Amino acid sequence: MIIIASQRGGAAKLAAHLLNDRDNDHVELHEVSGFLSDTLDGALQEARAQSMGTRCDQYLFSVSLNPPETEKVYISVFEQAISRIEERMHLQDQPRVIVFHEKEGGRHAHCVWSRIDMKEMKAVNLPFYKNRLMEISREIHLEQGWKLPAGLIERAQSNPLNFTRAQWEHAKRLDDDPRLIKAALKECWAVSDSQKAFESALEQRGYTLTKGDRRGLVAVDWRGEVYSLSKWLDVKTRALKERLGDHAQLPTVAETIAKTDKNLVERMQIFTAEIRQNSRSRVESLLEQKSRMKTRHRDERHNLADTQEQRWQQESADRHAKLNKGLRGLWDRLTGQHSRTKDQNEREAWLALLRDRQQRESLIQRQLEERQALQRNITHVRHERNQEIEHLKTIIFSALPPEMKARLQEQFEQRQVLRNAPSHVLAPIKSDTPLAKVRVTRFDKGIET
Image 1: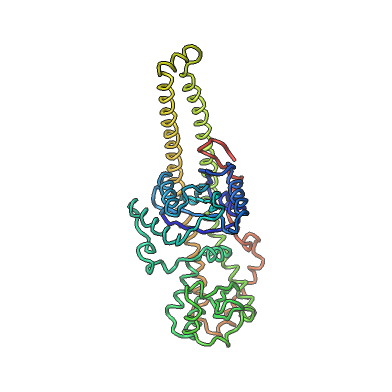
Image 2: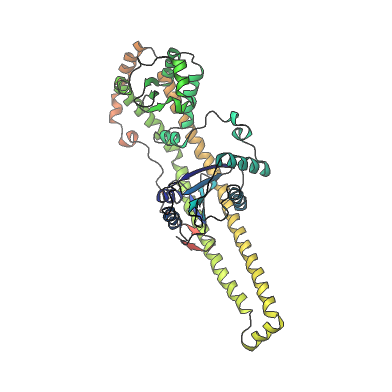
């Protein structure tokens, strides 16, 4: 279970992210505890208000728990992990919220604590929290019998293709796989021992070595997107300068973009759009199936919640009826029968709660398995699309001498007919149309928000 955490503010933005129904199939507000409010947004705003009595700007501790995609993980495992985090970070008495997200057949959890200790009116200190969370993550993998990621075995063995969230969003805007981008840049760096060699390797991949305005050395791709080499290569600026030497003669970003052949970019955009459109045609039926499945799964969950709520009300009434009233009730109190009946009712209520929770968990696991099977098909089509796009870029730019660019441009100009292609071919492929706003069910209280 990979655990990612941050100290932060921004209660409204975090609440919007946690209740985001556009990028998630299902959102479940599992717990709100220690707050006066019983809604997620209200709870986080309450934490913000408490922080105003202190100097703390990062008044929230936000943690995401991400189990392996191939493992079946029950809610109890998430809750145990959260309790362990709470104990190690000394957050036992702090208010918290827990939210579950389901996406592409997988489920992960978010837990957010308020750092403000209202008794002391100061924030709970969280020293070395990344190291402590890594230890917890390693412990959970070993206890559950999951395969340890290389990064948890030894820090030095972390996957070199790992990328930050900012890098992911950067690449996601282009609808491209960031792993391919980072792998391409790292391969160019690995095979180069000089500025000239690095420029040649980048050119074969469709990038141009450039001096950035504020980022030092950058790479500019065929679409004019700028990639900071120190960030995407995970290399310090000093190491870049030592290997590449003086970069004063390198063109600026503006000069590089201006130099890029406009017609080449237009044709590449058209070719890429064609690939994406063909891919979307293949996956369209799968996306329709996904939409129907998403709606059906939500209906099943809400039907189960309604059924359980009705049953709970009836069972509660039946248990209450077992307690006699009047003279008989007084006699029961004198003989101790009232206390025995009350204890029995409490045991029955607890068993009923466990039964309902198991039913919900069984339903969720069945739906996850069904969704994962569909996601494998969708992922396969998208993987083929990304590979085809990367192959196209390699063909166009691999070992392309300057004198060939003019001839290549002439060949592209012969494809002017593509300018009249239907708009649905030229238009960017948009993300999946979201369904109606998801209803978030408080399973612990049986209410919807």
